[in-house]
Image (cartoon, helix red, strand yellow):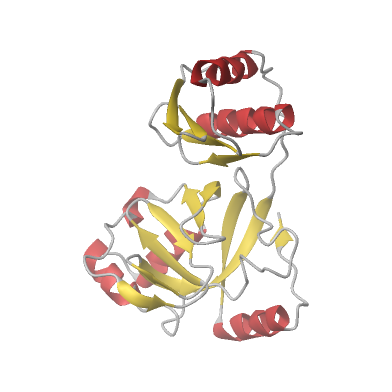
Length: 239
């Protein structure tokens, strides 16, 4: 599918390309395929291409001398795209313990949404989530696909220290905090795995376009997996 894109100069070194402002898997696939084409075309040049929900930011190493010429090149690359899928994606299984020990906001969340804890866990762990992009923190996954019954605005006053691995809900999204961090999302569980590890190449195995399936585990399993992670013997599982 071909979209009507908007191209604009973002600053002296970059061009912003925008798609329709909706969160959609078809748009995501289009964005990632175009990103692939741009990176391939500029393979011998130093550029960086950053994707978000509805955009690509093409960052050049040098100042853009003629913005119209560069936009023309990008438009030509987009028009030359074929519709064949070029990229392969994984579906990752992420273990999550929803026990009270790790779910500091689950009680309040349950009361506000008028859902039992078991209903929340079921609704949260059933979908296959799409990874739209990674940001905010290294390895923080922006996921699409949260059940609408679990949508809840972020906290008015953010917490100053959310623990690494915390699984939380904010607005229409859910995600995993890859490290200790301030944050305003509602914490409903914890995953013992490391989403981002500087000792790995790449540091984050999960990429935009991949999918996530949360799998509920108990305290014992959480501790066992955490020990394996600390001993570098745990491997992320794919479905």
